[in-house]
Length: 273
Image 1 (cartoon, rainbow, N blue to C red):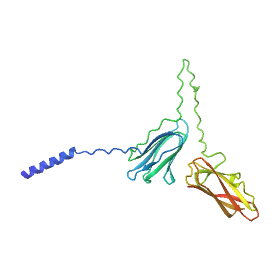
Image 2 (image 1 turned 120 degrees about the vertical axis):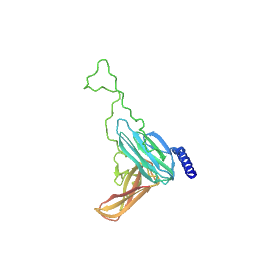
Image 3 (image 1 turned 135 degrees about the horizontal axis):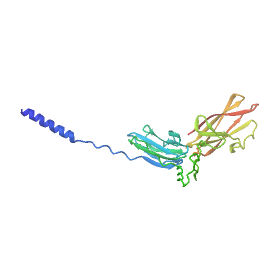
Image 4 (image 1 turned 180 degrees about the vertical axis):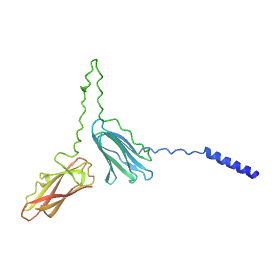
């Protein structure tokens, strides 16, 4: 009987302790980056921690018109990766950043709308609310004493724009580079590098203008094949130290060929670093 009483007392004490013990929920970490903006923007540098699940959440709102939202994550060395690309009136999304850690990261946004970005570690999984729209739908005119017929639209001081396609980011006359839609180019033999060409017999020069949507922080390199008819007989290349987003650059491809017949240049590659 004494042993049975001891066992009962210990068991009650254990159950009482289990009933009163509670663990406090972890306090969420403050956001690494929280920003609301309109149009294109480049954030300040931030660090992605080595522990925890880091995520970039985004939302944009164009109101009643179509727009676009694109965001690239850049590392300290200048490398980039696309974390968001969407076209429409509004949308939300997220991207896991845990595979990239360390300091010196920033985000470059290209958009025609108002947008919001939140970068956080172990953040709640619910997506960001939409920001206020960039374009506000006109307020309807209140009815007058003599209401208009139901089949007659009520005029508005601010007409609603039509759903026209978003114009391309590159200048008129350029074409997108097929292997990288953030690069556009055009042939132009009037570039300054070709002005002193044709001074020597057999000298050829083909000029090119190039522009990038997000810039090339280190350098931009281009290469062409030189054709005689349909046969590749040589190649030429040129490079620039770097381009800012939307900045145009001039390249020239020279050749000295002691051959008869007309030569042509064929674009082979454009690389942005």
